[in-house]
View 1 (cartoon, helix red, strand yellow):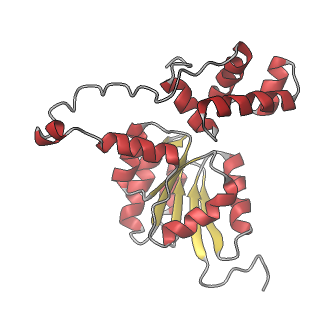
View 2: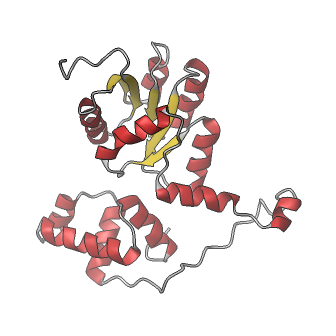
Length: 238
């Protein structure tokens, strides 16, 4: 069978995503999967809502940070218009507020954008099979949200308006060299490896070496986790 002619039983995937690079990576991942096909794509909230007026997909991937509004609106509309569709959030946002709002809106899976694109097809299959794929850093935040003391639960969340006490790091304080901090700050601002190399006037391999050391010290495996843990350890300003 032609690789570009999916079987009738192929998993139909639609995406609402304004990051063209990630959208292209997703397209490549789906093209390489014989059991799924990309049936629709949108770049904005408005286009996403229009997409929902067409034939439903089996899986809808939604970015929360769209240029003309929140992807939460698309998720809420999809739960009404495509009730049989499984919804997965794909975003750079990793904070608890966005996590809980997207889940409450109807998302069943939540992945950060720098998850390995080669694993996306497996995560989509898991979602269709009834699973709830979720990145480790997001799972950790969801667990923290529900890790309340028995007294708080009995009081009906009386302390809900109080800010939770910060979680102390379980390990010894993390120490980064000045150059590692410089790389970390550039990463936080969204610069690519090539851009960081130009700004620091070093080779991309030197930057990658710094990145590996940062990941090792923070005990993480992705950019989003590095930023999250760096903030946890007080290595970045809020």
